[in-house]
Image 1 (tube, each protein chain N blue to C red):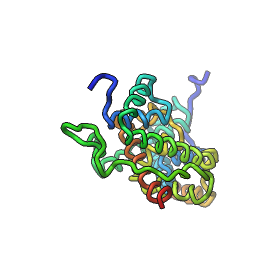
Image 2 (image 1 turned 135 degrees about the horizontal axis):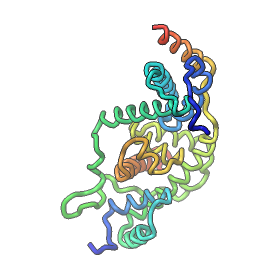
Image 3 (image 1 turned 60 degrees about the horizontal axis):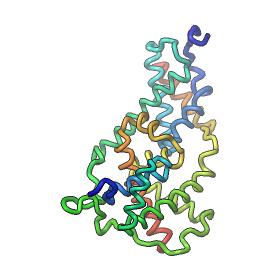
Image 4 (image 1 turned 135 degrees about the vertical axis):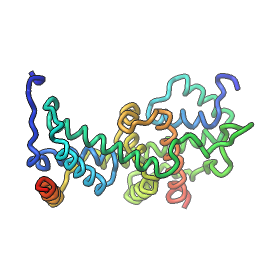
Length: 87
Length: 189
């Protein structure tokens, strides 16, 4: 294979990296060339982008919230540690 | 100067002062409430046991976080060794002459055209959650850290002590599985 021709395996890896903005310009170029010959990877890639969008939205409501423990959980922990300290 | 401060430990206040911080730190990594609670508790316990090793150079919280980090790596190691250690074999692709081409059964199907619509509704969220929950623990952990929590690759590799190529293999497997799951449960049903 010429240096600009890559396998599907390599192509999908580049595609995954590009979802996080971590594929280099050269890699993107190789990926685009690969798409000319390979409809399967092209399909994978467009679905992959859609998944990124869906999970991105899914996360929005989820990640911002500060997660805290409820007071019962803290009490349980305190009791547990106290017992351990006395042992 | 902060370097001159001699830090001390006061374990009776640990839960009150640090449990939320440690819990938040853990939940963004393991994505499971009960597990996160357990890891925080184990961290406090390990802290108690090794109090005599505390040299006062770091703050109490930093010291506890360093113990917690170790606990998370240990946990990751444990789930990693349960099934197929190194992710070298990529059973998505052919070997031999057609090395690196898609295997017939792994080829993605096309999705219906309206797949892109309506991406804000609750049913969709439930489907996404269901698919994430179905991932093997290790994939879920790495995928969540990378995609949902937005950690840098380097950071995840350092924290879980894996290589970046290993990380991308895991991400690919997770994504392929999620793709398939969403195809079955959402796009084509």
